[in-house]
Image (cartoon, rainbow, N blue to C red; front, side, top):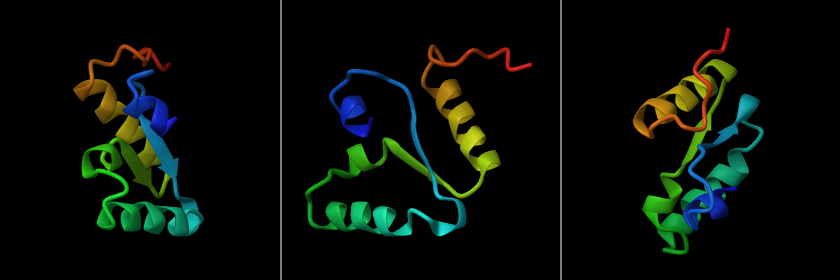
Amino acid sequence: MLTWRQLGLHQKPVVILNAGGYFDALVAFLEHMVKRRLLSPENHALLSVETSIEEMFAALEREATEGGGKWLDRDLT
């Protein structure tokens, strides 16, 4: 999904829910890729890593507010 976002095939947010540190190795690998210049900082910034469901939904709401929100139905009740 991150690759599709990089290619402009969608504008939806890409979030990893790293509950309990499950994806720590993946996050470290992506940071290593940035240091080795295999992944641009701009493309890395398209990915949000959150540690709780509340933080994940806050990140999604931020993205909707900053990015126009066309992908999100605001009436969540």
